[in-house]
Length: 174
Image 1 (spheres, rainbow, N blue to C red):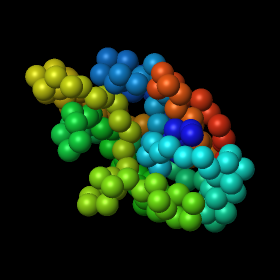
Image 2 (image 1 turned 120 degrees about the horizontal axis):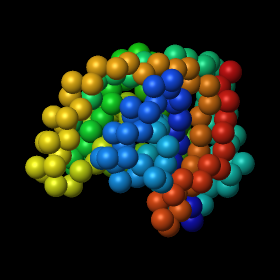
Image 3 (image 1 turned 45 degrees about the horizontal axis):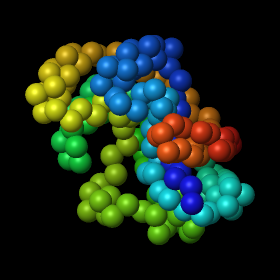
Image 4 (image 1 turned 180 degrees about the vertical axis):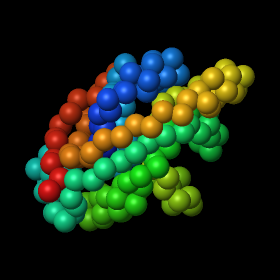
């Protein structure tokens, strides 16, 4: 059984800002590059080729698209998280998310997500200590940089027992 996640890895000219925040506040920063999750981690025995075919057929009409991220939001919905907000490209990300969670991935739709609206974002922090969480949120709240790029491919990662990201597939968008 493999633990996988489907996401994309945006590359920004000013990515050093995101990297510095993640190094400080995100325990997964050394395990996985900055990313936006499309299908949340799931355990399955789905064959690589079967998963690849599902993604390719589901996203056959999906063209490359531009995204802009900006503004940080602290959220305490499912833990103490710091999110980098999506300002442009949110609709495309939601559409991809919906298309991927069909067919062979339909049964892997997280229970916690069934009662909320999917809000695309980039996680830049996860801080257990409540006081440290509020201090971190205060430190990054005034960062007003925008992060712009073009999404050209979707990736499937395998998450190993150390939480390290091993890229299994990169699927280009049309």
